[in-house]
Amino acid sequence: MTPIKEGDEVRQANDPYANAVINILSADFPDLRDPVTPEIVRQHISANVRRQCLIEVIVDDPYFANWRLVPAPHDRRRVHLGCWRLNRTEADTERWNRLNAALDALEIQ
Image (cartoon, rainbow, N blue to C red):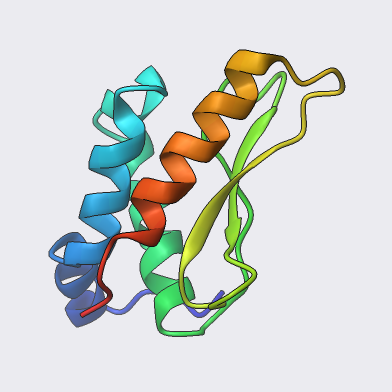
């Protein structure tokens, strides 16, 4: 990933798409309510929108890493939630469908 310059840092913090992604996911992934973690995820989302890098960002417990943000298959600037759980449950499928539908509904500005 390209190093973040001072001006980019301000723009990323104010990136409406990245902020909306964090807002959608934070109810399901409590680590995204921590003061530091969402900023790291936000920076990766912003870089992905600008096509500076392809991302895969863990959004749950890093020890398990079952849930990750990845580029969306239909628009590589967008992110989708991926589930890497070995034995996906019905609740996992519901979460995956619900959150990806919400992410697809977001506008990139």
